[in-house]
Image (cartoon, rainbow, N blue to C red; front, side, top):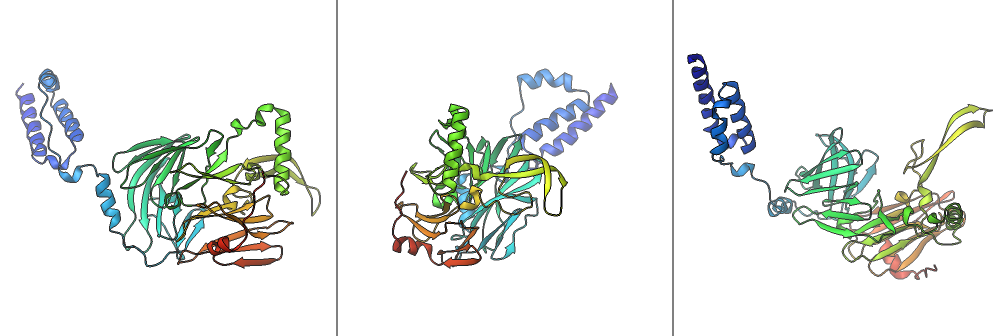
Length: 409
């Protein structure tokens, strides 16, 4: 009996020493520690009934442990200096570079990212372990490290995100933008901008929010949509409908008819900008179980088709919508650059006025193109036209100067 009493006194002394400095522990940690010490001293049963009827008063927590508010987060981001000019972002499969300098996060590998060359803002996901991510926002040449704005967890096909200000969001797709991120569920989504409240939006029922976004959502206010196969009236007609869709896709590839399976939507107004690109282009074909017939021909027993922005050999799948649809914020209006009507035409569209012009046209198709945003915000483009590369400068000025393309349904 004396031994138990002595142990209890010793345990209470340890507990008292901890409780004397409550700021070192959260209230939940303090409660768990109290239960553990009492149990170890064998007096848990003796005090359990009293604890249930007269629970101890909650301990005070220091201001350092208080959850950050949106205003405080906004104030920390407002300290970033505004760059005197835009910056050059370059995409890689495992990250990005700023003015030629690769960006590497010390806590994990950069898994996804969004950026705006005009402001220098960027946000990325850093994978710290399997299924666990930290979402960070930064500004190029600010002289400070990126700021953690949220943590994310992926379980199966579901993302769960918790911001540092306590907001919780969940969905099927998580897409970082230059400032904040969007989390999407089929045709609905939630946009979070650090320092502001969460806003929600919905696309038309015949569309889904596209999984890949090759443009900045935050500063343009535009998000890419993809037609929902389940809502396709032709698809509901069975084999006949599938055959009709195949003819439409083939006609679109040849530039004969339009198949607008993609569209940009203004999140704030709901305005749609249709894009004449077929969703069938996102598929790649991988051959397997092959045997060599001769030096030039392989016989393969199996061919698998699947969606990918890259070919099995690692090269870009230039038929995929990700490489054919780009949009940018500029010093005037946001601009869409798209390779439409198969691969034969590269268009430029003013997303505010809706004016669309043709930048390049080639009946045999344009193999690839690159768009570069200069430090002053202007857009330049180069296109592979057969064996030659052609370039054009200042796309926004070209939209004003060139005649508008009339869209025929």
